[in-house]
Image (tube, rainbow, N blue to C red; front, side):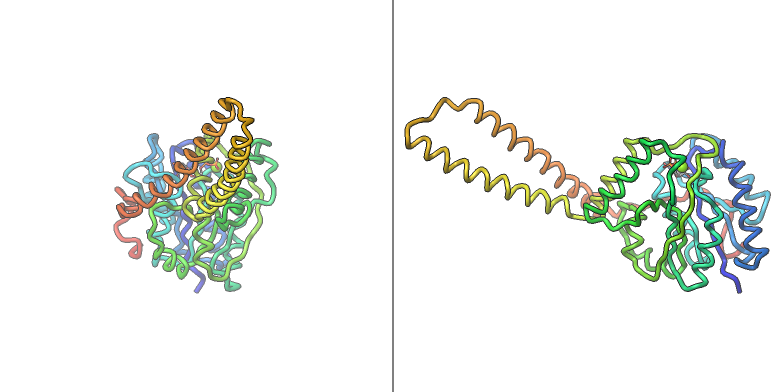
Length: 320
Ligand code: UDP
Ligand code: MG
């Protein structure tokens, strides 16, 4: 029996692009199942992430037009990561493999063939890796690549140039479901689950229509979120920095005492102000970073739901 695949596709205000890419996904499913690589029961699951445009209507109509299309809708916009998680958790135990992919046609869907092949070779997780970023602007490329480097320097294990285009087996999904945190950063969490994994390279295209929902500010927020969710290295850096500053201060104090005893002290206003500003600044930044962690602990202890599904195009996934 070929494996049953569910493609999980987060969609936020994508009315322009969905009519185009949904056909591409359907063609892919039909081709893979005609080659007997996947079961004909495979599905394309759109996850509407609280869109304000006609995205959900389009998804509902798609679900009526072909049995391969299904959709779920989050009760409000919760962000890309939560939308993918909602889809994956819904697909869990209703398929053999899932592939998550953006709905804008940027990720080459032909890499799915290789992902399915890798599953047959025994790989449980297959990361789609962007081979080139020629179509991205220089700025996007620089910021995106710095993002991966910063993440790994800060102790968050991520696959370089891998976004959220990946295949996950049902077995891994079941283990992943045990990670209960509410601050989710999928590409950093999946490597923690382990299992046999590999990468598949693909070329990243331009968006077919519509515009990106990831401006620099959101990307910085995602990087910061990723680091503080996956690693406590920033706290260690603060401690080391604190130790260095303390050592310098200690030398400074000895120097000040020696100077004072020799009777050659000046008024010293400028140096005092500089030191106060310097230490004050470091302290504020340090408290801020530690505060971020406390904020995360606060959100985690609340145990709020990570996603809330308000609508579905089906009643029971294992019945269709
Ligand atoms: N997305 C989402 N919720 C959001 C923002 C984005 O579900 O709040 C989806 C979006 O529809 C797309 C994917 O996440 O399928 C990636 O977003 P986008 O293409 O805007 O980001 P980029 O590729 O420019 O980084
Ligand atoms: Mg995109």
